[in-house]
Length: 432
Ligand code: GLC
Image (cartoon, rainbow, N blue to C red; front, side):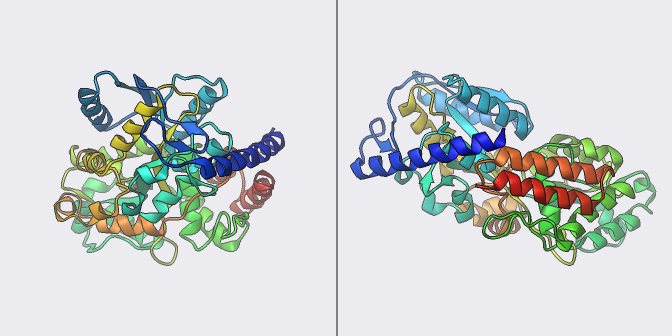
């Protein structure tokens, strides 16, 4: 299946590039509705949809309502897809394959840009209409494919270590752990407290879905390994990668990670942390605002992810706004994308829902740093974050990672065997 898809894609990518070059020569700017980017003309005004994963925070309907109040004839309806990234991707692909106009603006996970752009499921955007220079560079890079801009950065994401400040303090620990070994030592100390004796130490996102790809890549990177090397070639059958996967698999085996955490996505982990079941949890920034509204308010903080011998590194996450090639009312869509990805909207997403903004200056804004003291740390973590493989065949890559990482986590394969098999799968799925 993969080989056919890849060949067809190579062809269509060449055609797409040729089309882009031609239209770039002929383009002379224009109005919102007439501007050309690639071969798209953004025409037509009227109702559109915004399609994204389920909103756990309530902020998305609020920002859409702002738009709708100002544009009564160009209303946006919010189509909520399932919470997990893989189901979102599947539904968006189904919509594209049937050339349906049901979805207009897509909230595209940063790892899908190449796949959606190469298939021509999304339109190239007029980049001078978005304030990209004010955004963090690695975030903008996630929205590009072969030099063109195919999405507008809306929110970024970096993994962080949430920890129980109250319990660490009580156990005499004065700073959050920097290494995995320190984290497990801290847990042993915390568990001696009577109120913590039934708690588990740590959880991330280990169910077999995109979150596992993220957590696996972070473990590998945080032990000095790589999934793909600087040139994009798979390089995962290494002692460093093995140390990373061994940490996760070993932690599941010895109970540092509770057994049930192999079924956790982001939300299950958040709920477990908020219910007082975990001392540490790896999650994205969105959890901060929600946990602040829970009974744990004031009892937790966040720190950079720990690693094998020192601080770990995060995978680069986030969501960008893309325009479905099959949509109607593209002039409205383009305006809505500018509005929804504007600094004003990003600031609302941050204030209300602690979503990581693409805009660099918001991380240093004193009033925002007062509300979210971790912002400067998060900025560094995003700037240093490691992107997941940027490939057209991302679906094949992530499912191979999920398959092998899960096998190692649940003990059906050794880490060494899982990485050996993964290396060979990745070589096949990234071969051009
Ligand atoms: C978050 C990230 C996204 C990632 C997903 C995995 O939504 O922003 O990039 O793929 O989590 O669960």
